[in-house]
Every structure is written in structure tokens, then in C-alpha cells.
Image (spheres, rainbow over the protein chains, first blue to last red):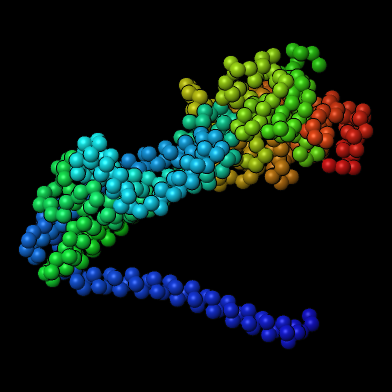
Length: 293
Length: 257
């Protein structure tokens, strides 16, 4: 083989150098993101870790910062997210099935599609106003945990619809054809083949949606969640608060003790988030592993 | 061919995709318990024609037909006919093996189950797999995933799956095009065996395959703007030894296509 020309070698060195520089930049980006996360966790742990205890989790809020707990907010968050997840999952997956499997592709379905995508970008406070008007006032649910959950369901609905649509679209058409060729109805093809195949992708959307619903504060404030709740929600129509509101409330107090409680509250919120995501991931892996899917 | 010998017939069948004609004016009889091959160059509408026999073209938006497709003398496209019922009697095997991501057993049991089969499912699965010459290879791992099978085994599984709903006709759309020569041979042997009990229509672009396995051959060719038309139809040995049309001769001797 002839020796490479000096020109080629010079360019080669340059190209290799560019490659290394790009690699370094990407690494730096990851490092910055990780550093922020670590910083946040360290800060929270130093401020609040000592306050996290069984007592903290099982106590109601109090005027005394050292006795204040998050029982009401924790339960409120779990209620709201559970209601939102169940409602949004049912509605979202059904809507996605309709759009992907039944709707005729024309200008009307395209308009619907564009609007769903846009809905995902609507500021969450707008959903709060909508929830206030529809659920709290028109349907007369009051400022209840049910109204809060339904408002959150509306908020995360587009996320689930879009994720489910993508998951359904990724199911190979050959599977549907195989089912139809055996005399399956459209519903049977969807139920027995498309949905089990799409489920991991759909659950990924649910994970995103739950994380979003857990952290949102603005819509619930607008629709009238409370900030001081010395009782656990005792039913769907009970009044409620959620963790982010409780945390926000504590951080705005002057006493240092409440700031510690806020940090502890954030740690609990993160733990709850991780637990819920882990549950969804376990569920997703179960679907992916199952050979008879 | 006498009408009573034909299980499937088309009468002046034209298929449109939008305003484009895919095949036009097809009049063809498919013989009972024989293998009929549809050959022709790419894009001549072979698969389109095949997919009219179980109304799979219905699934393609903007497709429509004129003319008639008769199954046992009954118009398949009459408004009173439910396409899912047709597909229960006319099975199909696709170009690429498309086993469901389920166990081997569940793949074969899928058709009977969705059709509300009552009876000994295990026995039906076994006999279907046996008919598809796959039972010996998979009988010890019925619960493992069908996706773990080789390409040739997957295609035989798809045949077993089609047999399990006990159809009268099996449509095969280039069933060996993604298989190696040995797997191809196994499928061809299988087809010969199955033709004793089933009527088979096979689309293939492999002329040797058509010559080897089929009893009757239809040669289809795309005519400008009008889609595929039948150039010649007859007994396979006659088509391949003594074609009447010079275009058929040119095609089977490999001068085009």
C-alpha cells in the first residue's frame, strides 16, 4: 500500500482531534447534569435528612416546625396521582387506539393530531382554570381530591396519548395482517396482539405522566387545594393538599425549622417519585420479558 | 375447467388503488385440491390478485374492486359477506414469516381461540403442527417463544397457524422468498402434501418453484396504465414446455423480469 500523502495525514490528525473534542464535550454535558443532581441531593440531605422519620411521615402539619409532618400532603399526592393515572391511562390509551387503528386519515384526523400535540404544551395553570370551571363548579365536585385528580388527568392525557400512539404505531403491521388473515376482528387484533406489544411503550408514557402529575403545583392551587390540612383525605370528595404545595408553603415561612421540614418533604417527594417509577418499570419489564406477550 | 372443479373464480376482476389500476379484467378459475401458481414480473399485481381472495385488500385505504370474486360460487364481495368469515375459510401465509410474539402453542391456538373453538385445543395444535411438518421439531418446547425458531420453522409455524382454523383454501404470498434453499424445499414438499386436502394458490417470482410445485400456472404481466393482466393460464407443464404467448416464453426463459 502506498504511503498516505502528507495532506491526508494532516487532515486525519485534525479529524481525530475533532472527534476527541466532541467526545469530551458530550462527557462534560453529562458531568454538568450529574453535578447539579448531586448538588441538589447533598443540599437536601444536609438540610432535611435528619427530619425524615416515620413520625414526619405520619404527622399532620403543625404551627410548631419541629412537629410538622406531611401525612396529609403525602396521602393527597398519592390520591391525586392514582386518580390521574387511572383516568388518563384509560382515556389516553383508548384515544390512541382510536386515532391509530380506527380513524380514517384525512384532514380532520390531522387537525385532531395537531391539537393533541399542542395540548401537551399548554401551561399547566390553564388546566387548573379548566378544572376549576368543569370539575369544581360545573360538576359540583368542589375543591376535592377527585376534582384535583381529574384535573391532573387532563393535564397528563396528551402525554399518554402521544406515547401510546407511538407505541401502537411501532407494532409491525405484519402482526395485524397475520391476525386478520386468521379471521380476527379488528378488536381481537388490537386486544390480543397490538396492545400487549405496545404496552411497554405505553407504560413509559405513564411513567412520564405520573412524574409530571406528582410535581405539578400550579393547577391544584388554582382549583383550590388547601395549604394547611390537618386531616387525611377520607374519600373522593374530601378536601386535600399535595406535597409540592406543602413544601412551597413551608419554604415561604420565616422559621428555619420549616425550611428543614421543606427539605425533608422534598426527599419524601423524590422517594415517592422513584417508587412509582420503579413500579411502572417493573411492570414494563414484565411485559417485555413475557414470550407469550 | 368445469365450474364444479373450481373453488375460487374471478370474473372480470379489476382492482384499483385510488385511481390507479393494480390488476385489470382478471378472469381465472382456481382448481380444487390443486396448486395454482401466479407468476409474473415485479409489480404486476400478483399479490394484489392473491389478496382479493380473502379480502385482505380491504385493509388498504382507497382500494376498491369491480368484477366478481366467487368462492364456491358465492360472491365474496357481496354486501352480505363478512370479510372475517371469509378469512376463516381462506387462510393466508405471508412473504415474511410473521409469527406472533407468543409461545409456539399460542401461535397455533390463536385462530381457533378467537373463533371460539370448543374442543380439544391441544390435539388441534398438535395435528396442525404435524400437518405443517413441524411437530417433531417443536413438541418439547411448545411453551417457548415462536420468535426463537429459525426462519424456515417460523414459516412452517405460520402454515400450521393457518391450518389450525381448518380453511379450505391456503393463499401463499411468496412464502419462500425470505428462506434459504433447504427451508424452501421443505415448504415446497409440504405444499405438495397439503394439496391433497387443500386448494392452494401461491404467488411466486421464482419460476423454478412454480414449475416444481404447481399444477396450474397463471402468467400475469403489467400492461401500461392498466395494471396486471393475465397473459396466459393453463397447466403448469404446458406453460413451461409449450407457452402459447411469446411474452410468456420470454419471461419463463429469463429474457426479462
